[in-house]
Amino acid sequence: MKRVTAILLGAGQRGADVYARYALSYPNELKMVGVAEPRKERREEFAALHQIPAENCVETWENILKRDKFADCVFVCTQDRMHFEPVVQALRKGYHVLCEKPMSYAREELLEMNRVANETGKVLSICHVLRYSPFFVKIRQLLDSGAIGQLVSIQHIESVGYWHMAHSFVRGNWRNSEETSPIILAKCCHDLDILNWLVGSKVKQVSSFGSLAHFNAAHQPDGAPERCMDGCEHRDTCPYYAPKFYLEHPKAITDGFARAVSIDISTEKILEALRTGPYGRCVYACDNNVADNQVVNLMYENGVTVSMTMCAFTEYCERIINLMGSYGQIRGNMEKNTIEVIEFITGNVNTIHLHVPAGGHSGSDISMMKEFVKLIASGGTTSKSGSDASVESHLTALAAEESRRNSGMPVYFE
Ligand SMILES: NC(=O)c1ccc[n+]([C@@H]2O[C@H](COP(=O)([O-])OP(=O)(O)OC[C@H]3O[C@@H](n4cnc5c(N)ncnc54)[C@H](O)[C@@H]3O)[C@@H](O)[C@H]2O)c1
Image (cartoon, rainbow, N blue to C red; front, side, top):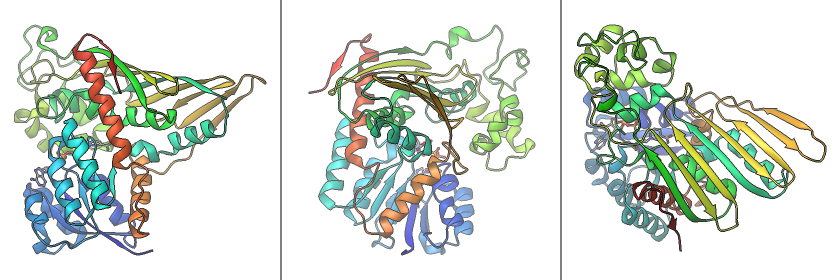
């Protein structure tokens, strides 16, 4: 297989710590040849790891896309509102593009990105990693094989995890929809996308309710300071006390949350960052506005109905799904990688334990990279998570948010 070359735009958590890692694990398949990243520490660390020559390490995506094309593809891993311009410019320059979700928060931009991808004939693959997860791939195979007869309805729960919510959607990058996008797009476009894929039809009608029920000033305990480390007397009773999470919770290290606080994750550096940085703020005194709970009801053109719940207040960050068919039922937990298939006629329950590759999203991140690199190396043009399908799920998310803001008024697709 031809070795694919790639340039990374945005050497942050996803770009550097997840996708580009594939090049280190599979150097015969992928080589990173350029990087654009304004944070010097991150850029230099990335350049050294991937042995990128100095002339190909720049501060901004604009500077790298100004140059003549010098790789097969570009990974657009900048923040949410910084995807549209680099994607369109990279496609026009002749690059294939791997773009982080959400593609954009704006309908016009979504449609334009897809239009340019189709016009240029280049691959625009969106990081809807769940489409590559062994868990959802298995469920889709079961549905296609008729294991539960006619699919009638799906119940899907996206449990965010109280600690993940506090890190990303209260204190962190995705806390305010004016700066990024509503949580139903930022977090749940994955879920809406996978639901569309499983149902295999287009959404006809959407309605949604939800709110920011807890992470607001009304719930700030008496006397709590603006920052946890400014002598908060609730430190032993508040589950959101920042030093406890970043220094003690296992996920803080395994899932990279501590590294988002400080690239040096020694106790001293973490505490220093919490004293002054965004992740040390009291969760009840942040400039957050995204919902911490939201339900979405979907009606599809083929008659299938779906109810989806996103909620912050769960122990784990996990996805649980229940698919109900005319002849059987499928129950699954993605993080546990288990699927139960129930057959009504016999009463048999077949429990499947999946063995998945290590890594994020229950093996999905690495599976996605493998398929993307293979697609580019083989000169293929059709991505399993191409922009045509992704636009649909993004528009569903925007419709859900519109409904939520209008007290649950249904939104109809033409
Ligand atoms: N697919 C998934 O499951 C998944 C999961 C988490 C996040 N995301 C998405 O991935 C994207 C990146 O998230 P992240 O957590 O890696 O964020 P991050 O902040 O860690 O990384 C973004 C990087 O872009 C850099 N940047 C800023 N301006 C730039 C410019 N002009 N040119 C080049 N780089 C620039 C920043 O310095 C930063 O290092 C976001 O859109 C996010 O929503 C996707």
